[in-house]
Image 1 (cartoon, rainbow, N blue to C red):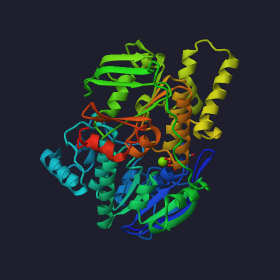
Image 2: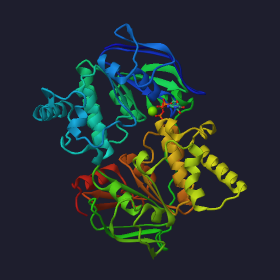
Image 3: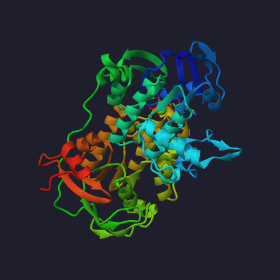
Image 4: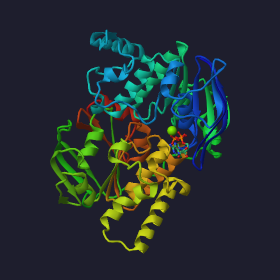
Length: 498
Ligand SMILES: Nc1ncnc2c1ncn2[C@@H]1O[C@H](COP(=O)(O)OP(=O)(O)OP(=O)(O)O)[C@@H](O)[C@H]1O
Ligand SMILES: [Mg+2]
């Protein structure tokens, strides 16, 4: 299917999200869409897929203008979207979610056997293995994302918009997805692929379009582009070195955090670790190895047994509130769960954890709080004009920055960051790394979880590797053994015993 976007305009109140964007995508083409957070990528994707209507301009398929008033109408034209903020039905099974609206029937009843068969065929075709009978709400985000992709394919879409499809996937899964995307295109489907992972965009796309501040900048063939050429068009500046210099922490005193023999129903087994003030400890491992479960247990979000000590003092952390009071902050993998109040304003989200703690505040103190919230927002790169907007109206990457600012505002002793740069653009990513490094220099202990090995290696002083709920290896930066090969060896269980 050929897609033409013609002079599309979109405003949200005072925000001019798209300013006369035009582009054409050929049948069977994979078109990348790049741009900073808030550039308008998701808005354009949503307009193409009938999720929102443009204020002006038109969408044409195969040369004919179409007017889409809903996703159902888009689907009738063969257009589907895998959204950035997932839209799965948590209480249905994986197979039911994937086949939603397409259920094979016998009379009026759903034909379960056919449904399962069709699901398995699809998984085979795309190359994902998911348990058809698992309740989707109980699965991790990466699996939910895979189910959404299968759903788009199940609907036999001829044009699929994928908005950050790999944001929650491990690098292995991301490679699978890239391969699957290529196969879909080889079958003649047209793909619009939105991602901040420039290497991935360069590897999978035929052509790449850059948006900046709601405007079309240019389109180039992937073969002629580099990460640097894309970033220059996205930001007007060239790519800076991404990782700040590492500071070696003093590990002689009492650790800021000591975990002893931690276990949990979520699958953790006899985990012990220590982090010193000023240290950045990375946790690597495959998706499902227990990384996020470890973060959740320490943060009191999941029940656990074992001992947790903060500055040498044993503390019973049986709730998130306890953890926060003990000086722990966590940037969760899933913004919607432990993260943000979407209907509240940006400033409120950032200052609330503190305002609650400082009970009776004078007007002056409140203003001070608001000012420091805005200062923190500026540091992470959220524009001042967004301060009063409801968080739910921000772009995905900007929501992530707000969450980051919110937790840093609590001046934690221990900061746990689960996938800190998920959905964040290249420039803001560097700012977030700089902030993490600065906080560590000031004595904060940091635990970083990331599926991107590069990120863990770039930031951490030491890296623990997890497999099946246990720590199976430790790699330190100091002895020069911090490399992707060594970490992967531990993660897969193929490391040579030393
Ligand atoms: N429902 C909404 N209400 C108000 N403003 C909105 C809404 N949706 C998007 N916007 C605004 O439109 C602009 C473009 O947002 P969009 O989500 O398209 O950006 P994006 O390029 O996808 O960014 P990201 O990389 O962070 O996902 C942003 O300024 C955003 O705050
Ligand atoms: Mg987006």
